[in-house]
Image 1 (cartoon, rainbow, N blue to C red):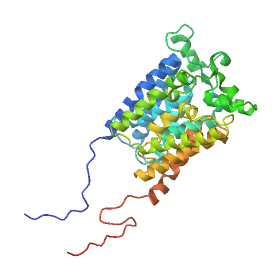
Image 2 (image 1 turned 180 degrees about the vertical axis):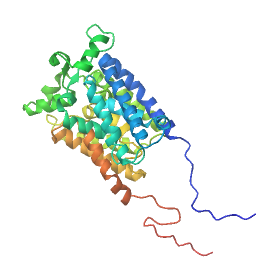
Image 3 (image 1 turned 90 degrees about the vertical axis):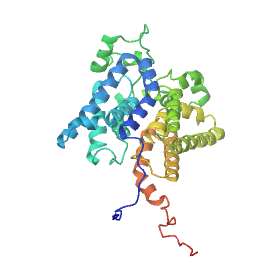
Image 4 (image 1 turned 60 degrees about the vertical axis):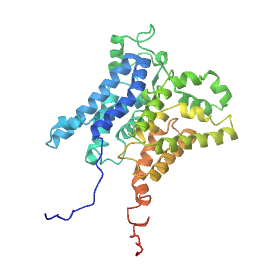
Length: 356
């Protein structure tokens, strides 16, 4: 028998397909999503369906333009997950066109112009969210009060369609600021933290009974979903731990130095989209570094930027900007932090094998 020389080295086959990975991430997101939809009622469900459906439509449209069959691509779950994550970051009662425009930006500008799945530089959902925030600041900063499904003061199904497609008639009666937004506004009025936080309930915020996006709905459920992803080996611990630890350390230092002007680490971890970003967005395979050390650097960079933007920036929430900035640094991180190739040293030079 004549054995041909192999053209390349052996590779380890993946034991999970793209479709399996995407659906397991969606499964981990589901408890927090269902809870958030229940908290904010029918208008949130309308926007969620519109956003996800739009993402699938734009994905199919782009694939068909390439002369390819759309169904096999849609079945991998990547477009569904992109629309899902985007919906998690939007104000629950935002108008319908916010979901449509955001999905178009995420799929077309954030994904397909780079060549499709696995080629994009930036996280599509975060790119769309930041673009919407800059372009439509009023719609993207109008946060609904908690209005659970089937409660007497919550909008019914007919009224929810009016909210989604015609807007709110009386914004002040239904909306208010998020915790981070309220703190930022009150600081500008020269108030101290002790007065600002009098009505803040750590338990309700931790459970998710507060204003915000679906991705802020429940710190508890998002963290549990993220831990499940780590245990299932869908993601590794490096980025979430580095991100959360960096925010915790920085917030602790500044809070201890001046507790009247710097919020505590618990408020940082329990507010905004911190858990959603740490476990579900920053850990994106395509836009984060390949090595464990690189992922630690990436996570720490995200945490540093989130803290800096929240503390001194114009926006109360800095997670989206932080992820995009670190996405742009991923190629540089991968260039300087590379795994050692078997048989070579860290610089890529062949190891000297001692003669017997």
